[in-house]
Image (tube, rainbow, N blue to C red; front, side):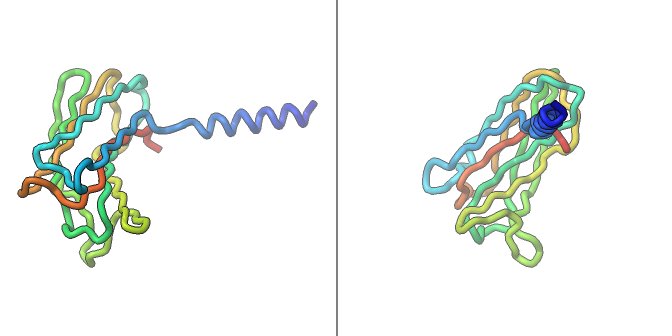
Length: 154
């Protein structure tokens, strides 16, 4: 009987600790010739049900290995349930000062995760985040895709 109780407690603890931390994840693959057109804005919409937790909002930038740019200009617009809008412009670092890739690469595919917001409280309700590139040309080349993830902060 004690063995069954211990086994049950162990399994219960394992189930609780394995609770997924992600509340939202969406990834857009580049459709044509690995290009992200300057005119193409990506939209992500998700709902927060628990406003007592802290969250991380992360941008996923997938590109070819040995990317030709050291950084990429990106715009984010975050619209919260209360209608407030926050605009964030960054130069996403692709390489460090030594020219080394900052992304995790496997073969020719590199995935870079950038924390837009870290350990923040989010109101209950619907959020809308738009992402666009501010590259000077008609498209940003060698982009395999872009995505957004919202996770419970650790």
